Image (cartoon, rainbow, N blue to C red; front, top):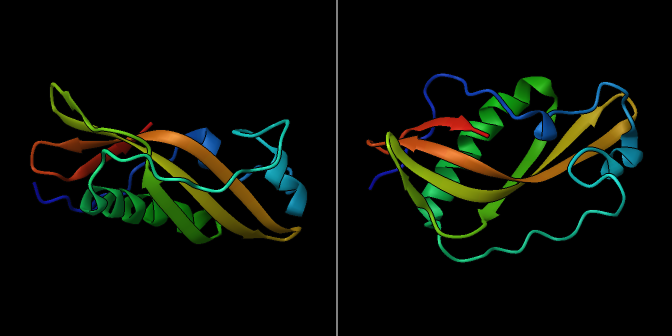
Length: 123
């Protein structure tokens, strides 16, 4: 399989979008991790690096217009076959540079790829 980044922009799930309330460093404690500090990204084997990279590129393309300055992604387990392609679980961390400082968003998401390996959605 040759995974490729999205040619058309995907939509980010709300858990990966920056908070409209700003938050600066306090943004570390929003959405995906409301009650505890973020933990380091640790890969769980299963999703090939090429697929993780394609998903990261697609997510970065969607997050950059929102102020993203860094996007990290790692495998979060084995890919699953779906009717229209594959679903790859990945853990994502996005650093946004916003007026209040750096806001960090982190969550485990599913990166959906079509039969040709193109990223079509992130949920």
